[in-house]
Amino acid sequence: MAEVSVPLDAIKGRGAASRMAHRFERDARQVFDDGWTTLDQEQGEQAAPRTEVIWEDARSIITANDSPDVYFERSINPYRGCEHGCIYCYARPTHSYLNMSPGLDFETRIVAKRNIAALLRAELSRKGYQPRPLAIGTATDCYQPVERELRLTRSVIELMHETGHAFSLVTKSSGVERDLDLLAPMAQKKLVAVYVTITTLDSELTRKLEPRAAAPQRRLRILRTLAEHGVPCGVSLAPQIPFLTEDMEQVMQASWDAGARSAFYHVLRLPWEVSPLFRQWLALHYPQRAERIMARIHDMRGGKDYDADFATRMKGSGPWADLIAQRFRKTAQRLGFNRVRVELDGGAFRRPGPPGQASLF
Image (cartoon, rainbow, N blue to C red):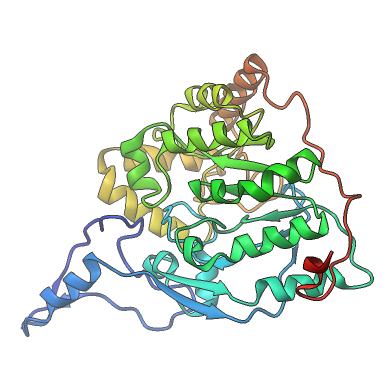
């Protein structure tokens, strides 16, 4: 009997449409109809994959960064993988090191660092620790849906509050509003800044591009709420995707009106497995534009899907990258973005005591 390959379909509420093999796998797998009526069951499981939390006892929490094109020196990520399912997420290939797919596994098998608060307390307590600002949630969203129950990000911010440690965070989730009781008083001491990613105001595109993240209008309300509570906030317009996210100026205007006073952007990055996943997504959702979109990406990447050169990987190069940069610069100048740099105070830090000790004072 001849094998019949099964075409992929978009999965409601998920960015990826398959458990694409990671780059370290030796065996290639393909779904096919074997004639034994098992296909319907497999397709049913594929259509509604459940989210699974995998506990991890991390060995370290603070990650150092020496990339010259990244604004932060050190970062913290409470989770590996992200249920938001953003198809463009450059962190997807990290699931390959866990022997998991950067596709559906990345957004359905979430690794949670359950010892994050205790280990971070130990790292901050070290005699030689230097309290430079930390960035939280730089790889995967620290307020993704599982945070509502697990509260790992909350435990980190509680420790930041206790020790007077400056930090920033970036998110697409309204979950950040839950922690305003900690963020607002820290903002008064210049210890925190929050950035909200708004890729586009197009709700239909957002549902496909970032299926489990907050809707664009909800993200604007997050900015408004943060600003009303005195928390310095900005907007991340990342990533910019040619012929898809074409409303940069409108996003910046709406974000300014909501209270954001800083802004930055990156162009689409397609490292490792992100490239075939994004191509697969384009074929499913925007087949008529797929070839044109990839052609423009190549124009900004020296003819390739991706160029990891530090000088160009965030902003791209060539006429199309220059046009995006010009649009951003002119709009930022017109509205007033980035006129005042957010400076966080690193001098308020006090080394933490043993767990529970702070409650005695």
